[in-house]
Amino acid sequence: MARDTDGRSPAWTDPSCPVARTVDLVGDRWSLLIIRDAMDGARSFTDFQQRTGIARNILTERLRRLTAHGVLAQVEAASGRRRLYALTEAGKDLFPVIVTLRQWGERHAFEAGETHSVLVDGDGVPVPVLLPVAANGSSLTSDTTSVRRHA
Image 1 (tube, helix red, strand yellow):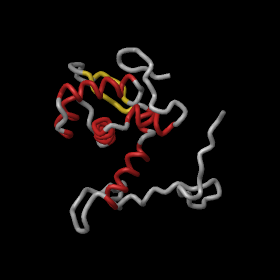
Image 2 (spheres, rainbow, N blue to C red):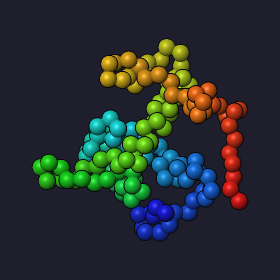
Image 3 (cartoon, one colour):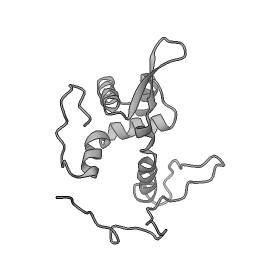
Image 4 (cartoon, one colour):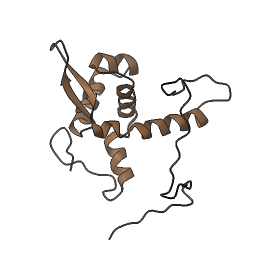
């Protein structure tokens, strides 16, 4: 199990729920914005601080926590003068989460006609809406799925 920066096991909100554990690890505003910016090329403490406007003490704590939980890793800069942050495989696995949050925000967090950024692919085309699908390719919704709890 991942440990908090003080070395203790985290107190999980709901120990058997993957959503609750994920939110406990990366679900606060600043952590998600750091992850978003890492996906968009931020690497240094200064990059994250300038892009988010986050206070230095909060940024320090969030970077430490994300590193401790294996979302980010510290790497040496080419100059060797400072350490940079890079997404780990676990961090990269959050890409669909960030895309889905972005797309939800595009649909529900802006007034009609209000300008906002848009995620585009390598050809400059807006990324299609991400939707979960069943093994047979049919669309999945909260009405067509259920949670199976293990005893």
